[in-house]
Length: 303
Image (cartoon, rainbow, N blue to C red):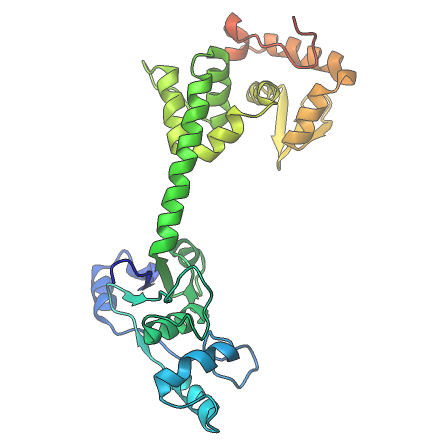
C-alpha cells in the first residue's frame, strides 16, 4: 500500500497560540474535527464534496443501502449531517488512490479505500479546509489544510527542473563579465566582500531559478540594467510601479513601457542626455566608474 496516493489533513495553529507554550500544548491535545456544512449558502442539502453521480457510486458501499432504495438520499444526508472527522495533532492520513489513478472515478474504477476517499472529498470541500499550507496561513478563515504527497513531489520535481534550467543559463553567461554584473544588479543580489561575482551569480540561480532564467534570457537585459542604474542614480524615479523622468516629471510608464521608450530611436537624444546626467552623479555607481561597464544602449549604433 506504500505506493498508493496519500494525503494528510492537518490543523493550523491559531496565530495567538504560537508565542504561548501553554496554549500550544492545549491546542495539541484538544480534539478538533471537521463536521457538517451546507452545500452552498441558503441550501438545505448537506455538503458531501461529491456530485450526485459520485454519491450513487460510493455511498451504497459505505451505507449498505442501494442507490435505488427510496431511503438512499435520506441516509446520505444523515451520514454527512453526522460526519465528524477528528484531526489529531499529527494530522489524519488518508489513502485516496483509485484502482487506476490514471483514470477517472467510475463504476469500474472505484477507490481502494472508499471510506478514506469519501472523508477526504468531504473535508477538502469544507469551507474551513485549504488546499495547501500556504493557502491556509494566508486565509484566516481556514483551519485545516491538505498535505498531498503527490502534489509535494510534483512541486519538488518542478523546482528541481527550474534550478537545472537556471544553472544552464548560468553556465551560458558566467564568462561574460558585463552580463554577470547586469544580472546580479537586476536580481538585487549584492556581492559580499571578497566574493567572486560568479559565485554570487550561481547562488542567485539556485535561490531564485525562475527569476534568474527570466532575467538572464531577456533580450532587453541591457536596457533594463541601464534603467535600473539610472533609477539608483536618481536620473529616473519610480513611483507606484511607474518610471518617471526626474528632469521633467514625465511618466515613461511601467518598466516594459520604459524599455520600449528607451529603444525608440526617436528618443535617442533624451537617452544621451540621461547618460550625461549619469556622468555628473557624484555618488558611487559602477555604471559610470568602471570603464568596462560603459554599455552601449540599443538605440545607439553597434560596432
